[in-house]
Image (cartoon, rainbow, N blue to C red; front, side, top):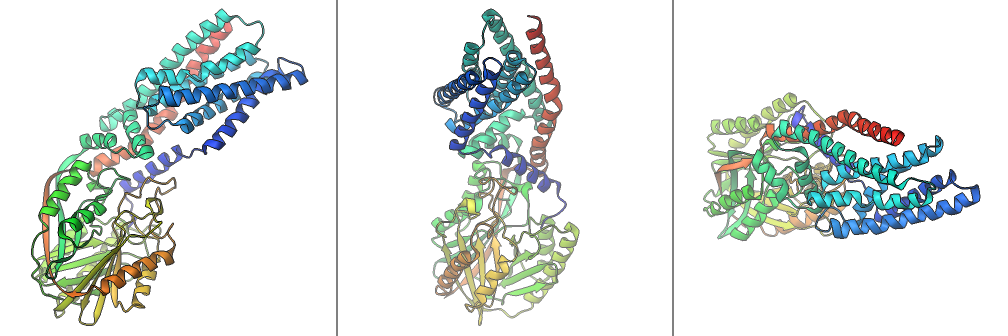
Length: 597
């Protein structure tokens, strides 16, 4: 359900900001553009110093010299100076040099236009030095000495070819300028970074740029520990619940796990991989098929680290060896009121209920809806109700209150009808398939596709669980229609809402919902295979449900997470506010030095 929710809006803004940071061209394009920039700068510089033909020859030679110097020192910086930094490979180091040359080229162009080439070229040198100091200080996890060396080892070697071409220059003056420029650049970049760090300290009591570096380490090279260290500091302890529904034959047959923990915030950070981790752990422990649909909650219950994941895994696994005793179940009932759809099936004294707003957007649903359902279930003599957010359609926005009212009405009616039905003996079959050639970038998590089929009388119901973050609108209906052609009477499609697929691609949303990148027919074919395997596995079964409480688990918390998301926007606004005053002051100081020394 897409609602007027400031946290979700803030997270969307974060995705947009961070996605824009990583759209770098390929290394081949970087080298080509770098060569063109250097040749252009060299040719422009020679125009004011030589006659036309000599200017062309000398300019190309100067540009080629600048390009070779860049290649050598970019390689030197990335391999020897920043060799231990996982972010700065040769491509990213060269890309930074390309941006620096774009800036320097502008200064040279203005210098040629106003016949002040030397002074403007030197100012460009200073601007590049400041830019490199800021970028390396903001992104590199190496020590300050290496950052300083990496910042200097491009502007200084590149200025040497210019010095050799300039006639009648005062080298003592140039030396003084370099000293003064380096001091001004270091101080201005330090002041700029300090002001940005203060924004983080005021917002979440953590400096902005160390947090940003930790994020980069995760986004670029997949290291989650540095970022999770900060999340642990921000986390707050809370008790969380997990619902288990277990089906047994002579041994465990299948288990449905509904953790009231949000699988986020992104990639491999926090509880993003929890659905597939729970599936793997329970299948190993019980030697059966497990699936983990999404509960009723949002990002306010993201876990802060892998340590917290392990607490839940350990508690769920140790609590999973209980015996199933309920031998009868009702048929599956689906109630739709035009806005919301509720599906329910009762096993003995407990119910399994799910919600969707499909074909409208079905995003995170509030916990209050779960409390309402539990109250309604108790009215009908049910001891427990595992409630699932199908999370199976993404298509625009709807009103929170309108959706909530429709969901409550559908739930109440669905529970009333289901609880009154006669319970019969039932059979269960289950299977999992792992689609080949489909990855996180396509929106599919490591849990693959799981189908649990429940047969009551002549009715076969398929519960399809796809390890992904939501689903394109209309695909759910295609899947259910294709299952009907196989003799499946009823069913519902769930996604796990895994955020393992988030922040692995550069797009507006930051991930592909199921069906956006994966071919629909291919996906449906895999679901059919899993369903056929589940139907062929049908056996008379018993069921049981258990609610588990995991105490003192650290979650990031809605307020802290929202502040963390807002921090990005606040830092960007602060940077825009201070960049002109700080660097204009630096520029004035440098111009005064050039004018009077």
